[in-house]
Length: 92
Image 1 (cartoon, rainbow, N blue to C red):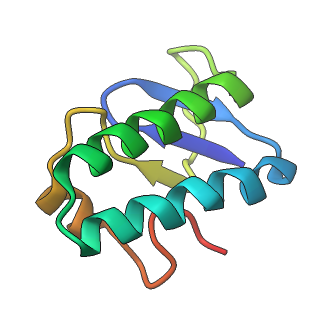
Image 2 (image 1 turned 30 degrees about the vertical axis):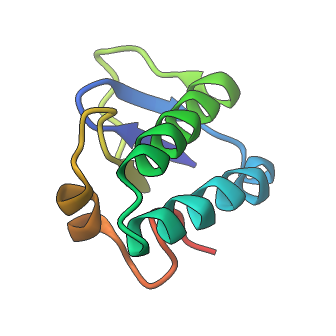
């Protein structure tokens, strides 16, 4: 799956990693619902770090369609709320 981190670029990520990423996504959703700004910041950073760690960066000139778009590390709670689906940021 091709994942875009807004403002950074794209990575190719194996579907097998999504179970691990969904745990962070669930934690992020819980912190957002509770208005936990510091927890939200920490977990968003951890989620994006894990995507960077597990994913294979695509070249900057690659024009692959992104199947999943994640917020930038600087995104606010409100900006991320607008990106959410019923499953959080990551489907499943």
